[in-house]
Length: 146
Image 1 (cartoon, helix red, strand yellow):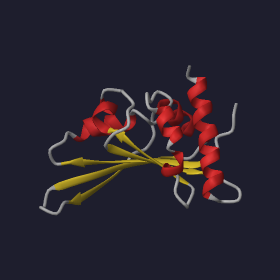
Image 2 (cartoon, helix red, strand yellow):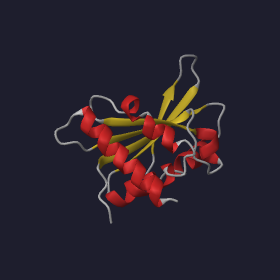
Image 3 (cartoon, one colour):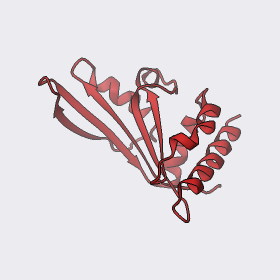
Image 4 (cartoon, helix red, strand yellow):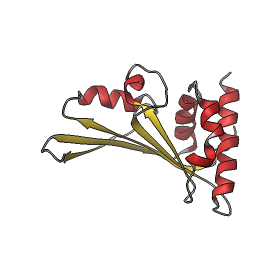
């Protein structure tokens, strides 16, 4: 089985007062392996409204492969690969924004609502090396999914 050049993957979303928390949790779970713990933190918005932050972090290779397999379902995966130079920062973190509404319907799309951050392994820890490692990783998962 191929190595996963990531240290971890974090997913985070907000559940606003107008949203059903169970549905937002289900949207987040679309990307997570079964029985992954989801952290829940309640906050108050600027106008006094309730905002719940839901987040999860996966660190094992199998857990990260599960997330990557879901990302391989992205119709825009080639676009993500082409944009890696803009999606990987100087700290070797890969960022994606995923559509929360689509995720609730078990559909994987770029959009708003869920933030994915993956810490890419790179030795030395340079952005260029992280971009190349992320490219190889996403291309491998894209090609395996076909």
